Length: 293
Image 1 (cartoon, helix red, strand yellow):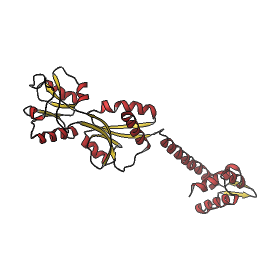
Image 2 (cartoon, rainbow, N blue to C red):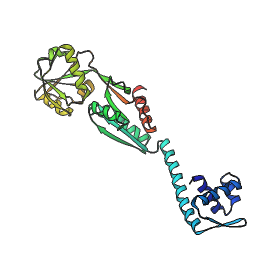
Image 3 (spheres, rainbow, N blue to C red):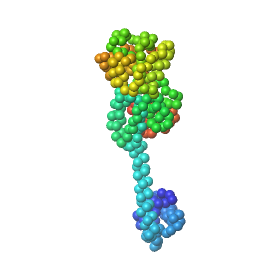
Image 4 (cartoon, rainbow, N blue to C red):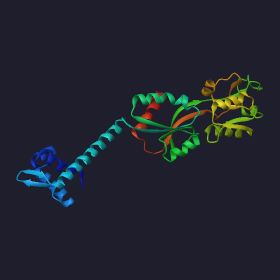
């Protein structure tokens, strides 16, 4: 059963005859007549009683007419909904963001995106970068934020790069140093983020290049808790400069880390060659506009 045959049948009923229906559907009278006959043959029951140039509905025709109206209305609703989607009046944007840095880098964009596209729902999940990359590969999110460099399976839009800062207890020997490196910090126990945070790999890889094997005394996913542990003298930690400045603590000294290859470089990533919805493309355009204008 085709929608065009239903449309022809409905217009015959609405217009009271085949000739007027043909004008409405931009077809010949013969085409409209054949469409209605095709529908009757398919359903194996007469739908119209024909009296010369006039036609009236049979009992079966009443049923089919009522159902056809509903089906054509659904079709119109479908087209309207897709037009809304294309016009970014509705849809869903799925984002995966890590706790570290996202409030600063992405929260301001949420308000801008919401203002431009109020009908787009934003679904947000928070995990470490490694877990987010897995979710992105499985198409569970449209975008994720991760540290550069990223695997070849992803395309990336750089967002921001920051040097790392060492967080030292107030009584640490290097608390007043202009900068520190891992050889100088080797005797100090490390406080790292939980496994799955890409920053850990950056730190540990740099330590290995220096021939340093740090003692890890604690892990946490909470930035404020890590800062508090440093202030309590448990060990030392590392944060991107902008985040360290936001988490200033009187019991913690912030000293620039002088280590090559340890910059914290955040990027928005998506599957290479993967489909991006109109909502996703709008988000990517906003990120580029905000950070690369």
